[in-house]
Image (cartoon, rainbow, N blue to C red; front, side, top):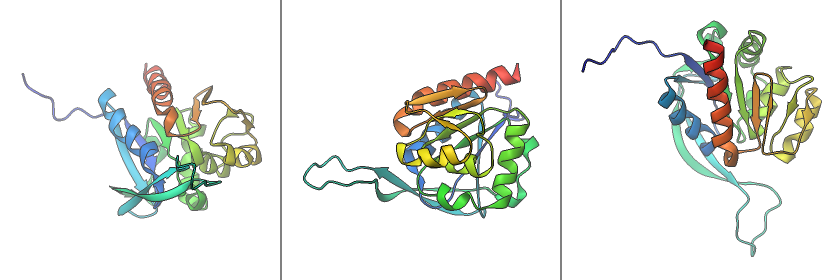
Length: 197
């Protein structure tokens, strides 16, 4: 059997930065190609980035009020935000972690996020990723979910925060965190296929 090497897969944009959440990111990074999508990892610069593990430690003897951050794997960004063109992508996947806290100030990232949303392409977002969509002005009038400590970010962006594991509103699927990866990715892939039909 001959394999077609010149087959072009639709591209999904995945913006990351240092302290992006490992499970949010790597689940989609490996899951999307299984359905024929190329994940293009972008960062402030085209370089290697550090992922982190974000969770409230389950040890009741040492309580935490907020997520603890520990080092995760590394992931290479192949393109810088300034070089992104929305027309190259079939959709957008936004991870959580601490990275969105500073990525939301990057004008080229906000530009391409707005362009993708305005073009009516599917978007998936987990956890703190809502900070990027909010800063880009892309959730106004939408029902969204996120980790509860980012509910204010959702509301400030004009979204209606819903405390549910995942929420689908039009071509936007949002999830609270990596625990919701399976449903979020199923819906995202369904939307991508429907948009291409």
